Amino acid sequence: MKKHKVTKWSAIVLGTALATGLLSACGAAGASQEPPKESQKPAEGDAAQTDPAASPFAASSMQSTIEEKDGKNVVTNPTSMQVVVNKQRYLPDGYEPSDLVVPEVPFSFGGVIEKSHMRKEAADALETLFAGAKEQGIELYAVSGYRSYKRQKSIFANNVAKHGEAEAAKVSAPPGTSEHQTGLAMDVSALSANNELEQSFGDTKEGQWLAEHAQEYGFIVHYLKGKEDKTGYSYEPWHIRYVGKELAQAVYDSGLSLDEYLDEANLSGK
Ligand SMILES: [Zn+2]
Image 1 (cartoon, rainbow, N blue to C red):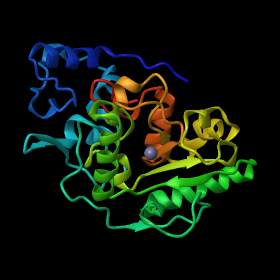
Image 2 (cartoon, rainbow, N blue to C red):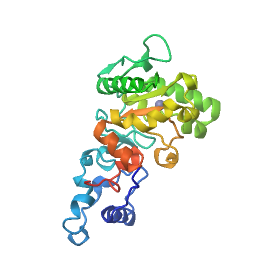
Image 3 (spheres, helix red, strand yellow):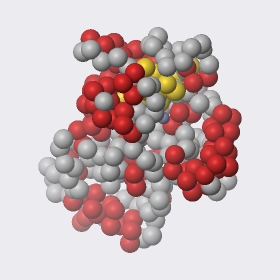
Image 4 (cartoon, protein in one colour):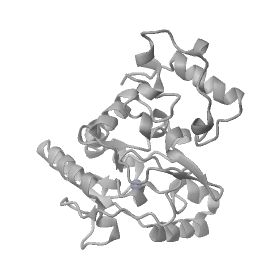
């Protein structure tokens, strides 16, 4: 893995944001930020590497895809394959994907229910990933995909009742902030882990295969070990999120979490 370099340009942008007090926890400051003065611009020739606007993912940056609504930060690109939803970034009220289908892959449970679904493009990619795994002797099972706002609400309420709000927030998302509600996430396990969603799945050969190859199929393992403070979640080796092949490979190569990668402070034209 390549180590990510903080560029001169991003240091300037970040420095400006900090100096003017515009940087919020979700990085929602971008829209109101003034363009840097001519003298602060990086030298000619350097620009292609250091200008976040030159990144192919500039339109999906954390800063350019958020607006404040009723005191909440709501994403403006809920249907994008590159949307970032986390505890500071809500889906719009009532968001429900319109193209949910059931991928043709083995499931850990029988029958078709809500969590069997994913959005069409993600479902197709999941089928290709499972087939690619199988060719290499890796047998995966789909455990949990789409989750509606309503279902997330009841899961979160159960966890709060059992463990209290702070603990509940570490292991489950407040309603409106779950990546599963986008229809782009699937929890995956294997018989060697009893099809459980446990961190030990990461040590199985299936979990290791997933960590090394998911990006080839357009998925990332979103909640990485050591990135808990960036993603807001504990390590979840079983949770894969579809973002498309180009972004998945770029995020993987960067060694950053998706949330970090799409922050303008880290985006570059490379
Ligand atoms: Zn998950």
